[in-house]
Each structure stands twice: as C-alpha cells, then as structure tokens.
Image 1: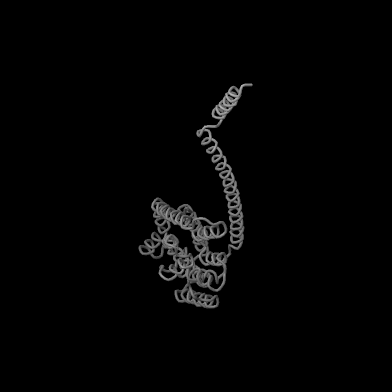
Image 2: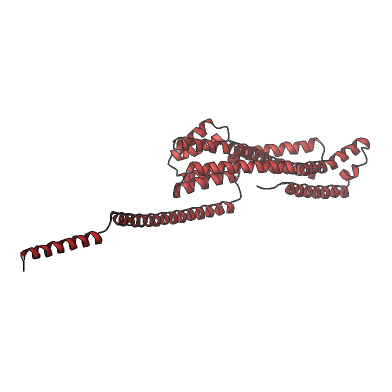
Length: 330
C-alpha cells in the first residue's frame, strides 16, 4: 500500500475519533447541573437528618412537659386533700408573729370579755353563754381570717409587678436568683416578705420546688400556683423564661381586670343585699324608740326567744345565699 494513502487513513481515523470525543463529551452546563443536583441531594439529606433530630427533641420536650404537669397536678390534688388549715398556718398566712399558744390565750381573753359584757348588760344566762362562745371561738378566728384575706389581696395586687421585675431582669442578663433578691429587697409588703423567705430557702439548700411549695402554703393563691408551674416547667424542659413569665403577668392583669368588672356589675346586687340585711335591725330600732314596750315579749317570753332564734337563722341563711350569688370566682 502506498505510504501516503496509509498516512491519510491514520489522520482520517484520528479526526473522526476527535470529532466523536467532542460530540459525546458533556458540556459545562451539564457539569453544572450535575453539581447542583449533588449539592441539592446533600442539602435534602442534611435537612431530613436535622428535621428528624428536631422532631425527636420536640417529642422529648413534650414528654417532659407532660410529666411535669402530671407531677404538679398530683401535688395540687394532695394539697386539696389537706384543705383544713391549722391555727399555725392561719397565723402565718395572716402575717402574724403569734404562736398558737398566744392565739389560744387571746381567744380566752376575748371569751371572758364577751361574757362579762353579757353579764354587765343584764342578759339572760343562755345569751351570756352564747356570747362567751362567740368571743372565744368565733371572734378571734374572724379577725385572723380578715387579716389573712387583706394580706392576700395586697399580695395579688403587687404580684404581677414583681413578675415584671423578673422578666426585665432575665432579659437584661441577670440570673433568676438575683431577680428574686431584688424583689425581696425592694417590693412592697407582703410580696417582699414572701420572696425574701423564698431566697433564704434557696440559700440554705432547699430546691426550687420545695421553696415554691412552701410559698404556696404561706400564700395559697391561684397566682402563686401559676408562678410555680411556670418556673418548674422551665427548669425541667427549658425554654424562654422571660416570655413565659411575661405571658403569666399579662394573664394575672387580665384576671385582675375581670375581677374589677365583676365587682362593678355585682355592686347593685351587693347594695341590695346590704339594705335588705340591715332593714330588720333598723325597723326594730325605730319601733323600740317609738314604743319601747312593744317588742318586750320577744325578749322576755320563751316563745319570743324562739321566734328571734328562728328569725336569726333564716336571716343568716338569706345573707349567705345572697353573698354566694354575688361572688363570682375568676
């Protein structure tokens, strides 16, 4: 074969092979598409892995939250079973520094004073005995309950402001214990007293749960229970404490506003109850002043005494019913 023809065949085969390589080779656009596809697959795999981890974390957090709420519910049920409050707890809730022994001594003095008042005024023996019992058992407990209710009302009015102090402190970077110390120093009483006892309990080694339980025993209010639930859930499950306490403060203010609306709406019924309750005494006083001897049979004869007792019982029942009708719990 002629060498020139052989050279032409070789060069022709090489040209055809180069053309085939150029035609069959992938373009830069195809490489870019494959690169993007691989990156997208990697992102999707990482996203699915992170989504799986997030779902697992959320499930674990929900489980912890449910366990915490169940534990708090059990403790609340146990506290409801122990609904009867002892004298020592009543004095502590009223903010009095008396011991039960001092309370019983004061009750005895009040009983003797009421009995002496009945003897000096010339009442019958059974009326004097009834005054003695009221002075020893009723009047001291009424005073303690009145002081306890007034203290709880003051605490409720200032509690939302104390929670706002914690929220601002946490947002500014202060630890919760330091915020509690600030409230214990600067808040008005009785809020400062309760938070000071809480801080002292944490200082001597009590857990947050124990200090909150003792705080609820000293101040058995729904607001304190809500505060304890928020802190316990945040401690066990984590989360934004400032946001949770801010929502709690808003709820407490809404409850206070609702109570004010209820008082305004029920003021007419309460005024009617006061007028109806005081009317028999006013009429009796007017009759006694106009004709002093007209009502003597009610106090002298046995039948009149039974009539007075029955009238007092029925009137007390009516006042109790009207009071329950005008009280609406939020």
